[in-house]
Structure formats: structure tokens, C-alpha cells
Image (cartoon, rainbow, N blue to C red):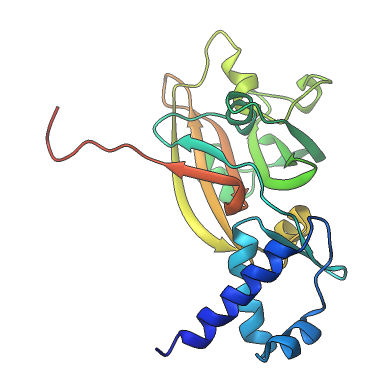
Length: 239
């Protein structure tokens, strides 16, 4: 019973969003909170749930907009595949924006994670993957220049370092990823056009070759409403 007011709020917000055409701006937070009879903090908490479903998008300094139903990319975690591959399999179109290619030197974090000496020359590739013209994921890949130099990226680079490496004669063989839900930092929020602190699905992963050498250190941030990840697991010790 204690949650009834919040349930009422989410129900009213759901109705408002469903009645509002995609692309339309919702009333400001102060006006909407007054209209619904709740505090701005409570309203913000409720709206965050709809944002993680991809139904609304809050833009810093611009307001909150209804984006309507979004295409969801579905993938099992048993097999690593790129966002491009997921989209192609589901007949969806993804595009790359805000592509930044940098030459950097390995700091302590990179040195430890990738197992390379400090100050090793590295290539860092940052980009936003968009679907239907809206940001869906932010990817940051860092890899030694011995694996990939910035100037070696093709002019038609579609956003997937994985697919690029998979086309080589000695492709990657495995990946290890830590998966967590995090609040968006300021730089990630800006890239994804969301609010700082909004919930994202975060994959922190390493890609290995057949000898166990780390090829790529990746940080990937997914807006949950655009992706549905699942895993099929073996029960007990059954072979």
C-alpha cells in the first residue's frame, strides 16, 4: 500500500506518454510535477524508468521528449557479436556518429588491463551507435597500435572494431566481459544525449586472440530500452 502513490504516478505518466505523439516535448519538470501533484524528485525517479525503456529522452537544457516505441535489438550473450551484426540480423539500420579516433599512450589502467608496458602507443576509438537517428549505445575501444593504427581504419568504417578484426586471417577467439548497471557519467551522458546519472547497461570487456593475448579493451554503454540481452545456461553438471 505504501507504494500506491508511486504506482498511480507511473500509471498517469504511462498514459500521458502513450497519448503524446513521438517527437513532442512534455511539460517542464516543475509544471508536470505540479500537474501530477508530486515532488520533482519523485517525478524524476518515475520518469527515469520510462527513459530506460526508451520511451522518452531527456536532453540537458532542452527538456523531455517522447520518442515512441523503439526497435529492440535482441542478442544472446553466449556469442559475441557487434551492434552492427545484431541490427543487420533484425533488419534494423544503425549509423555511427561522433566518431573520435585518437592516438594515446597506455596509462596505469590500460597497462594493467591490456597487459602492456606503460606508455605503449595505443589507438582509441570512441563513437555513438544510433538507430532511427537516436543514440542507442556509446562504445570506447582501446587497442595497441601493433593491432590497429588509426590510419588503418577504412574510410567506410561502420563502427565495429570486432567485425574489422574478425575479417583478418587470425581473428579474435574469445572475450571476457563484466556486466553491470551504472549511472551515466557526464561525458557518457553528453554523448548519448541523456541526463547524468541515468541508468545504463555497461559492458567492460577484453577481446583475446588464439594465444590469449588481449587485442582490445572495450567499454560499452547501452541504453537499456534499445537492447534485450539474454543468456542460455546449462543446468547443473549435465553435459
